[in-house]
Length: 426
Image (cartoon, rainbow, N blue to C red; front, top):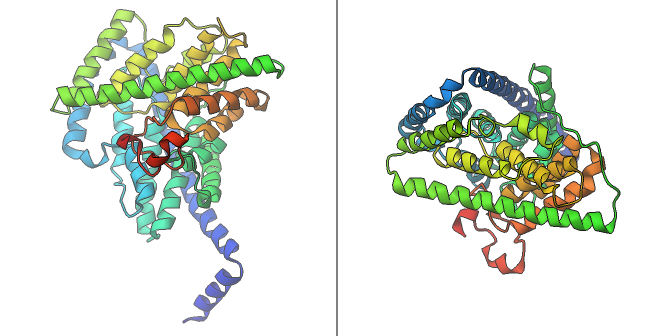
């Protein structure tokens, strides 16, 4: 054994935390720069294609053809990456499983196509898959062991989520919470937070914009307002349950009725395009950021969130790419805003509560959603945000937009015997 090896072994034995910290500071710096830059390029691209589509609405008529072309690409060249976020979850549970690099360019291109031609989709799925697709091959090239590759993937997901939404704290907790409900892997806590913070900072250095929201009126905390918050959380949980059930049912319907996969986005794209032209507005396609912002300022009609659910579920169930989270923000914010007609809390507060609570219920990530609400809306609304997220999480049951998500700790004794199973196995 060389003198250098002896010194390294001695250092590792005497100061194991120092060695761990230096290793992950180095790895997280790479993650932060690479994933933060990828998120920035993605956000800039999304902004450009959204503006281009809004200036050339005729492009929406080509959504079926765009879907067919994207379906062909995935069917013949991207079968191994088709499962998207579920592939990331499987790779965390089984780190010996490889994530192909091609998932990153495939999902980037497919998401840009979805938004350019008028699909209703989000961006979180793309950010997470790009992060995993870029960093997992780097981890294999560095010859990291299975456990280090698992932590690397969790940190990469934290970086992708935190940088694409501008919420590094929520991104870090989400990455440790989303693959195993009811439990958190604390061995990844330092890499997850560090990678998310660095990636978010790198994204800000690029000319990429994050949306800012404001809740100006926070009512006093009293028993009556807490009851209103509980009621709102229950309704948000039911909304999340509706979304996830509808998503899984329609996905199964498309697969059972259309055996040739490229035809599914063609049919789904045709339905969405016809709906957009029939409605006479592009409000319900794309990310829908203007509508989300407007929800904090004006009470929304009760049908807005329902139309967004419908177009989003058709888009994603048919096979278009992008993700569910930003549409869930839209659904939650507009639904919460509409609820202010019957729940006597400020419109902006209910919009903010719905924004994160429907997401919490649909992904089983209440802690991440609490932090996201605080990062986006301020700590003053934290108690109301927390109540709504917890209630939505409980009411939505063991359902999730991520079928491979596993039950780490059941929400009630009734589900105890399902611990360790994935959501798709229930």
